[in-house]
Image (tube, rainbow, N blue to C red; front, top):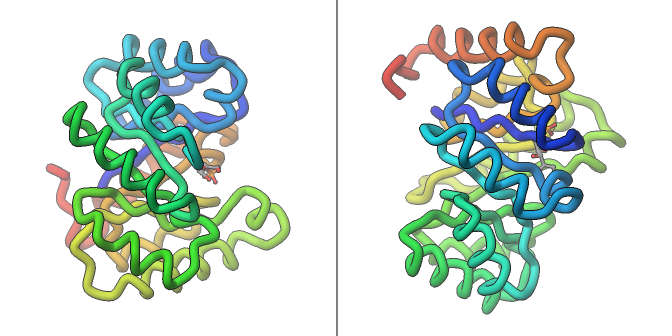
Length: 219
Ligand SMILES: O=C(CO)[C@H](O)[C@H](O)COP(=O)(O)O
């Protein structure tokens, strides 16, 4: 089970400093949508250069213009780029083609997708599927609601072939409800980046995963 650190609502230099502090405790580094919107592909290039050993995720949330946007992300050094599952299928299809062309990965964000859309998307076996409770939903609800929503959406997948990521308000407190569902990737932003001591937050989350039966230290 991997930890993907989501870096949002900060400058590139702040993102580098934060990621540097928690480097040993996270596996993947996400350049958040807010950073990409504010600073463009430079944010992806800088994180790529400063963290060569990490898998870099560009949370582009593409909804259209897939070939152009994915070309930008992969050329800037992203290993994974994200597309919205609610986008037209041709857009998702184009992202998958771009992933294959570049030998890189695609994450499909399932935010606001219908069951029919999720069924259609399940044809993309090589994609990573991100079960996501949005910031706006989080801000109107509470942490427990977010954890419950993630859990019930995850259950809809049933027996799954694809890799699954979970995102949206995940914290040390919500982990006991989420980890038993065995997601492949836990995307964690504010619980680390806004913590009083980010390194303590990240190491506690890592320790929790280590201590969880079935999650090996090698993963
Ligand atoms: O995609 C995102 C926002 O749209 C964030 O990356 C995701 O929600 C993780 O951040 P947090 O843990 O703060 O919710």
